[in-house]
Length: 245
Image (cartoon, rainbow, N blue to C red):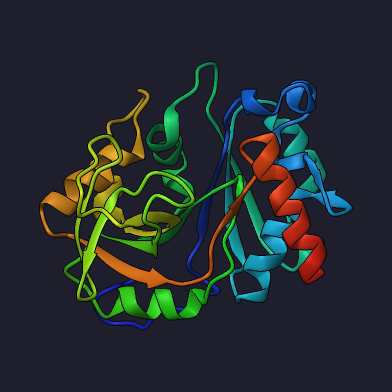
């Protein structure tokens, strides 16, 4: 894809779905299955995620897997039954962190791609987000942000007048009222900043881009649901049952 002179087509922009964690907070549920296959409202959580992406026009997904990831691949296959194209990338013998897992999947991603988390349900207008990123060619990344005020988790973003001023997951400041929503877009130039073959946290990449003024922000308004703990799992279950998703 030549990003300089053609319009982004949402069907052609792949998603890197990070789903390789150990899910220790959900034990014993995740003792024998990965978090992606935890049952929620009658089907595995990954089925809900992929259905959401498919409804929004996304067709290509790269599953970045680790712990018990082979079960996910066996369940989903090549994605044809979902009307999608699925590929798989594995951490290998050691966990690579979010950044390391993304770097391992580089050969399966294009010049522009989404980055999302495999334990979160994020119902937003993906086409609008992609269009906003296309209009900001100087940005190497775009982070969706949600007004949070420490409600859902600790706020980590300063966002003002439509601009992402600062992101820092580790050092909180009083002016941080927004939170990283969990849907990002990156250009390949950002991916190439991640060191190869060693664990790396994507939070460090995002912090560096924000310090350089090369991380755009896009405000969203629907809250996210995640399944990282038994309490949040139950909350997500109630939401999916209520909405019939």
